[in-house]
Image (tube, rainbow over all chains, first blue to last red; front, side, top):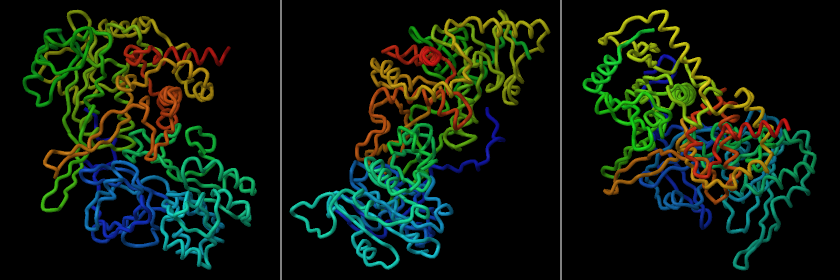
Length: 286
Length: 345
């Protein structure tokens, strides 16, 4: 028998209990990506930090971690952008408005708003990496007085892969944020009159002050090293870079081990990391 | 310290089997190995053994357990977190396994508040036994876990016709309430100290340096890929070393659907970092793709990473991974000693 005296949590209260969320709206962004808008009971807000994630439980299907795509400055329902790439996410794509899901979280460390307040923000997103970054992009757009200049760079493999198409048009027209986009290639069946080339091709032409700029980066694993190299060449110091990393959290609470990155747990210590924290970690692959 | 006659200890166990609502489990022979299993009677119990196949971790963190159930009625889902509170009375736990459970307590109860673990743990009773036999692969003395002074409710030491009994908790004391015991004499207390002291010389395997040096040694050895690849060459990535380890606690969470289509549950099951897909993410990227990386991760986690987080070296020196590794590449004592030698060469 082990005494309960050393524990500090209520008996019977389990961290594995999800709260019920109801899907109130679904928006298809691409062939593989849908935006799910989820309402919590009594209209309460998720109360998350930009960059945090939730565990989404779908009865009969399974559970998976997703970064929150909406900003906490937006009250009410929150948003997840989900790509259908496996059993769980394929089944999630079959859900309809009105369906009920389980939500655990929010978990992890998001973007450190205190650390980036007052700075010029340079958001760099590759592919589905726009979803986690959108939480902090919209945070900054909703509170422009708290930050300096805002710039977003977005790269996709092809035009049809762009997420949040309507919102991208608004960003392109925005006076508050400089928005630039590129695609790696344009298949014959698709139209595109913008830039082509990988995301890093957008960095050299940028004019920004490395003394006052912070870069916030999220994309596929292969992207980080090249983006960081390009940022360093522009004179940006390592401690002015933040990364959101993807791993396969099963528990979200620092136990299951699937998201371990050397001695760090992405679910507890991340998913957003200050670059110097993970720079020398081989398993970060950054 | 109390003293109990051998026959009275048997009677106590019989009494617990007969009247305690909890399942009484203990060490018993099973073919050529020892296992922790349900006791029908005290006769089945063996307190003189070297090493069990699995540790008693399985009673506080079962191989499979339900975290959540769901049920649909009239298009409404009910989702309910579950935490099976079934405790066990576990008899015959060696000190290194007690140390392993104390380590898990620190993580699952004190730090991360895991309700399914906490309930089983707090409803369980651990009756330890001083080692009488030492497995060939065991190096618990080097890890400071050949003897322990906490982590048990009762700790018994075989003195021949009698057992010395050290009371570790109030619950342990209460277990002895209706049993005939007497206070130990100075000679008996001295005898237990001698047995414990002699025990430390009974180990064939020995770590060549204090385990407190492991974090620094491993950190310095991280990039020595030649070493890790050499060791991992024969590794089958079977994960047996993870499964038999008393301090491994990684798990996967799986959906299990009932046939009615309306209900089911989420289960967690033991998983292992040696298995190929353990660190794979949704679109196929595997952050520990090479067997040498996974092999290295296990040793780093045991001797360094866990230390960084919890202040413990997460190897108790039981030797189970060594004994059960088909390819004979899992021995932490050998790996750590060789790393040390390479560092000082």
